[in-house]
Length: 126
Image (cartoon, rainbow, N blue to C red):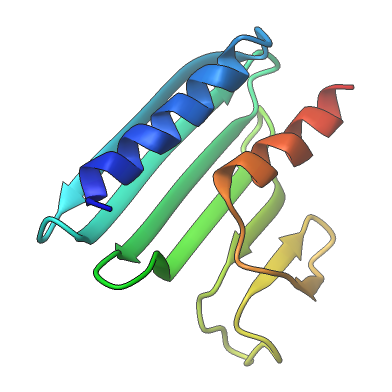
């Protein structure tokens, strides 16, 4: 898969969720280092003013591998509601893939997909 194809897939996912009328604006952009390596960045603004900011640094040469990622969801005032990432932290986190909660805890997680994150966010609205 090419990076541009991956970005188009993410854009289609966002478009599908836009049909719920809970998304008021969105962007998805690819910064290609090569045809199969690069960064995807996106922003999704929801009807209540909350926002999802995401970045995935991908290597798609052999399989879809997220080298680094961050999915940061915040309320309309900028307060974090949750964030999935695999960044190294100080003090060190016991697991590379984790979810930060608004109360400051970090929990082990799987490498997330945008569709799963959007499902989680839709749960806040329902």
